[in-house]
Amino acid sequence: MTELSAELLATAREELLFRIRYRDAWLKLNLLAQATIWGLAKGVQITGMSRINPFPEALVLAFPVSFVLAGLYYVEDRLIHYLSKYIASRWPYSWDASPELAEYAKGVTLPLRVAAQVACFLVLPGYLTYLQFGADWSRFAFQAVLALLILSLIVFGYVQRRGTGG
Image (cartoon, rainbow, N blue to C red; front, side, top):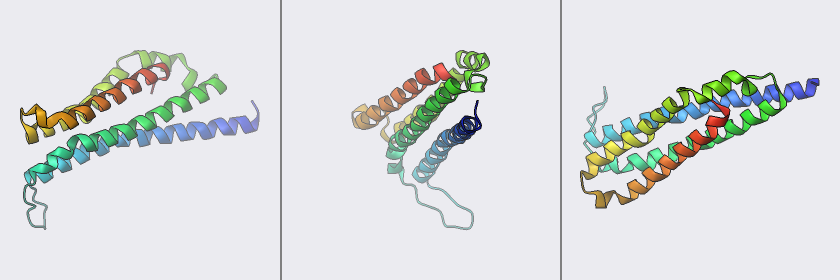
């Protein structure tokens, strides 16, 4: 391997690690956003500030916010997939081409990550939306479409990552 190709692969690996950290931040940001939406809906008391009056209509934002953040998570996950394939095809002794990573991808870790995504991007906003609309599913149609789109992103992400791990 030439010095230039080693440097290019090291740069790709660095980009991959950066993207993994960035991708995982979307999940955390969604949890924070959903907590904020719930806080707005219930009314919150922030230390040193006056109480914010309850704004239950804020719950209608749970699925749209979750959809945007799930989409951004998916975009990062897709880039991670391609970076992993690029590195693995050019650096045969790397982690990206290792049998250990292939075993990881076939184990319980990826399904567990999918379960976390479903909880964060679907269950939590679904519960918040239920708080707003109750059992009146006719008013829930737009959020149901977003929920199906979010589920599609999670499934597509799982299928693609199953081949490359992480």
